[in-house]
Image (cartoon, rainbow, N blue to C red; front, side, top):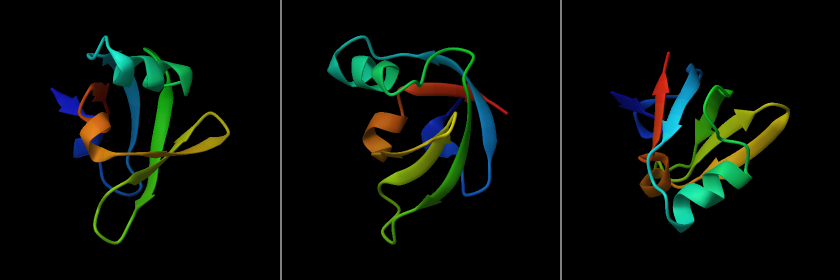
Length: 74
């Protein structure tokens, strides 16, 4: 089971599910990270946190601690 946290720059994946049902999960869903959504990792900050993700035509910054709750498949 891969998570968004496991992806590196240039990787594309499809969201399988968001495992967190509290505030972090709700924030992910509000940003458009929901089951079936395709996303691409555009890069990361110099210290590897946060990561930059493209969802639809939107570029998002996601903390690695939050990216763990997003299960993806390549």
